[in-house]
Length: 196
Image 1 (cartoon, rainbow, N blue to C red):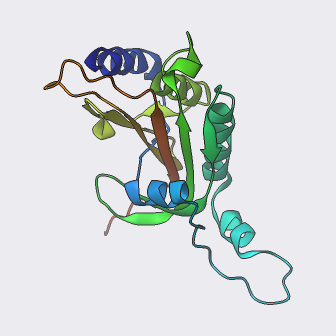
Image 2: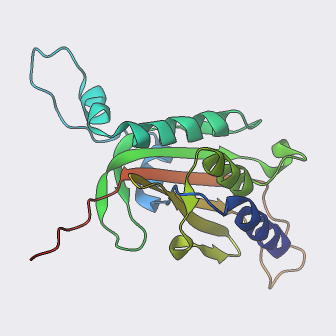
């Protein structure tokens, strides 16, 4: 199973240079999405004719919504992959601060992808084509998954890809054939103004 991670990481790095989008996975939002829990939304004043969810979505910059919508469309195009796209807080994996954003959660099968590139490679290539750049400060790899991020000058997305990494202590263990993608995008905070 380590070969899947190693090949995937090197292929994504080769494909992902020059990207500016940051992807990050927040475990709590993904768990809420997987359990079917409704995302939290801000209420709108009565009589305005808009739902709470659409009001919250409208507050997000277009670049953030477009990143989540585009990533969700990409993931839906993968055979046998189930995708949901909730709005709600996204946690920065480095600072652990939560900010308003949008999320995409997907669960699929490596076997269903057949000869297509691995999920992180496809995501990295997609973001690169959109003009986003990889932020290596968010790169993390392990036997059960990988994390990475892409960013633009206005937004950042965090991605976590998880899979069954096997059991090195049990040579007879057969890993299950699944992967999960958790992606969250937020607007970048403006840089603090310098004091004169």
